[in-house]
Length: 482
Ligand code: GLN
Image (cartoon, rainbow, N blue to C red; front, side, top):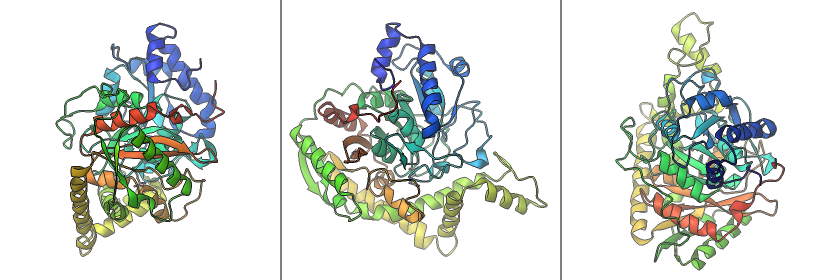
């Protein structure tokens, strides 16, 4: 049997039975990147087996010897952390992010840095300063963004799991485009110590895998309180696989967001897949309640203002003095800043910084940033009321299937890709995207379950019951066999 699409569970058994050694397994996946990644572009760097093994620790947990890849905005000690930007192209991290540290303590092997949109800004991974990420299901199409490399690598069976980051949908959208499971945790559930900040009131790290069980396994290793992150919530680590029994919670009520399917931009095949998925949940025993969720319509505008403002503030630190690239050809400090930032950042990042400074500027902050935060509060209030009536919400992950490269010339049109995802980040609640079908052209479609704060357990349990009664997760793109 090929190991390419094997689950972590299967790989564990093979390691335990000594059918394969850790080193062989590691080299197997390194070689898969060598063989297939030229055409996908999912990785910015794959480390040498020797250097990976030197940094690994031995433990007896399920993850010991299991390779994975982390998005290149998550710090790994002594490795480059570029955020897919020229400004950090040669910048090395001096420490491990808490998630990386925890994974290493569990014996997991961090194999490289995955490609993404520059500073995680984008929905297609076309804004990487280095190369684009193709979708393994159709190489003419994007893998989604911003964690596109993390998605494409797992989808093509180059690696069993990956870490991504989310500000407005960057894990779930690529998961939907690539037939994966992607979780965006509750704000504060996973430490962000060592995640390069984009918009701090929204950013979260999350996990991408091909099965729910594997996702819950990695999640269990990284979630929980971290004193190094001041936004970290006081939750104890626990085993999120323990509830995966194939059954739905008794009397589970799912709120089907009706207005999510009303917009004319929504692809018809996506709509059909949603009807089928919700029917499946009903067959499994869930009580389905159609609801209207007004916040969906406010999310993009609110999100755009808040992210630009916070990005302008966070990215001010890349000034040529403290980190990364500096233009050497200047006669005064102002010129050095201008040249460094002008050359170091790509167009999309510069645009967001400009807009961010504008919405924060004197005379405008009240109209934009302050108002956006008021709307955000209204969205939180609406969600709170809705969760008094239903346990979870259901809606699509994506507006359309994965689109072709170059489809969106207008950055605002690209922003609409987050229509179904950004509200969960604004409210701070967890959401999971899972496969639920394919278009006629064989492009994956994903749907989401969204729950109240810290309901990850219920999200995993519910999505697992669905997964066990469907075959979507067993479908893989062709052309990536050994
Ligand atoms: N597409 C969104 C943006 O560009 C989401 C990015 C993200 O979640 N990191 O802001």
